[in-house]
Image 1 (cartoon, rainbow, N blue to C red):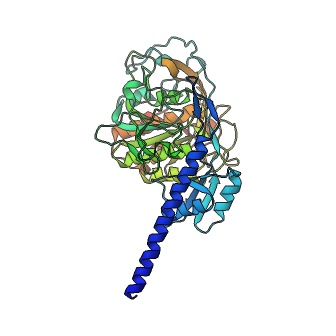
Image 2 (image 1 turned 135 degrees about the vertical axis):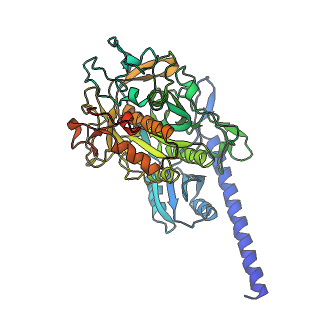
Image 3 (image 1 turned 90 degrees about the vertical axis):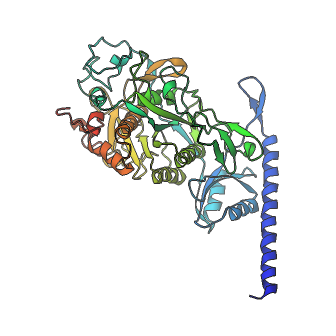
Length: 486
């Protein structure tokens, strides 16, 4: 190539870069204008606030497609690329500035040669538990090794003495497991849910706090976040309102629903502290990942934002090993699957509730629990008699293991305690047991951890043909303390 041709190509490249930059700036102006014209709603303090638009579609472009090209494609369709998920390559969220039907926009992108898939950012919900006030539990003489927590006698899932109509030893054998370990503050478990009441007296000592040596969370499009106690994906994180040059956004994952706080208590309420209950782990770090609001609803984009955050923190030195997820949908999201897979690639186990529809997941899939991924465990719920709970989903191929999930006593908002039922409660028992294993064997691989959880579970005849392992998770067995007859 002669010198004149080189200068021609250089000039053309420079023009394209400038053109793309101008398009990007125009799109930012359009988004700003769109947001400023949004319908105002009432804030909790009575003031008016703008309603941020929600990312309408999630698009994964083919490998090798540059962000410059993605932005140019979006701009040419009068759309705006809101965010790139840095930990899930080529996955972005796009906002249509014409307010067109989201399914139509997704189909338009799916037909492009540069696109692997495109889908609507649909709504998903928590696996609604049946919450109730704490019931009166018969007084029981507790065995040696039981913690001092005054409500422990009511935690049949940890120690089933046969009271309240239960079956003796139909539990995860926690007291025997605690002879080996009570958990470790070096292990981080993320609760992907409605947030966590991090001020709860039985949880605050076990809430993850970002170490000083690890910098604030930074997103290339959305900017910096003050993530002292975890991540909140519900507060307009899909908008570039706190992008570069706009300061630091606060990320406050405080629970205003109760569901996430209940799940967190199962995993890691502080044990033997003369307060309330004991978690499967007396010592652990709970990282709140909030993507559900007060109503118990969220969307796929926010779930992926939270998982993306978790992977980033893991990559930056946080010993995050497990994500506990108690939500579901009948709609299959390829983007959510790819996010969970990316978590697995980072060494994170994903424990998912099987669902509360009394249905067979082998025939009617439930997501995310039905994703066939090597880092995922799907969990059904049992009652205190080792029977499949009437509400629990099941599946001989797609549901891996069972755990206690009916009338489960745990932490609640405002420093309280409640019983709740659901596969939402079963999944944290598996996540908590996984954390005990890691506390005892810090260098265990993800594959070995999953194999240990499933391979050491207690076989239960009543769920044979309903769950792949026909078993209930057993913490003592998982720690190598094989308990005959349990």
